[in-house]
Image 1 (cartoon, each protein chain N blue to C red):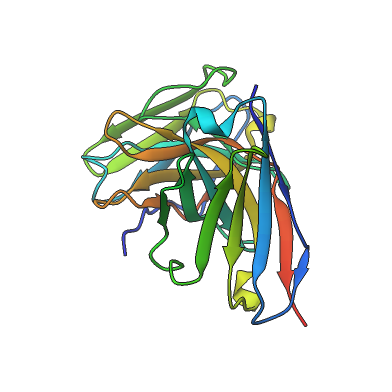
Image 2 (spheres, one colour):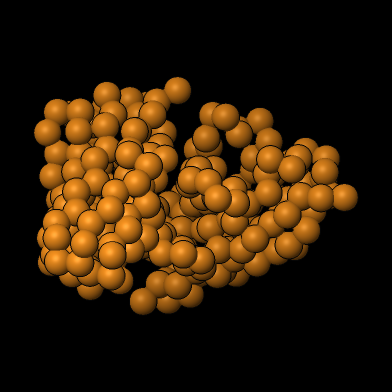
Length: 122
Length: 107
């Protein structure tokens, strides 16, 4: 059974870069699927950040694209998120997830990590 | 930008049927999905591709759609179903979008 676990600093200073890693167990990333990041500000709804295929191809939320980089390390069975120039508005719970493809070649998240809280503050 | 619209809250008594709606212009051509998020927990997929139920999800959860409206139905809602529910789909370009969420109260 696939499981995902987020890790990274819980506190980031404004203007710096937020870096998180998702470790996948129970499934080899190099075998396929997309893998994604989603966030949820305190008391608010969910926002898709972006996704990456095991080969490295990516697609990002247009509203965050200029600040987001998602990468994959198949040797460690991990994928990572970098979000640059953070502000207080980037304070959120960050989730990683497995991304499935449907028959229309659209994507959805079926298995999620437990999430990690990141606070942006000086 | 594309939006999926949900009611902020729905309230039912235990054993009643709860219906949560989600409207979006692209829904006639894109599948809707539904996630359940209990307080302090990660979202869980309860309905995918309009009406399919993942393994382990109780039969009282069902999904349907017609035109620009998708509906999550919980038949005989139980106290443990109290949670936030998010609809999800993609816009015409394939970009993922979540609805604003609906807080379901069962009491």
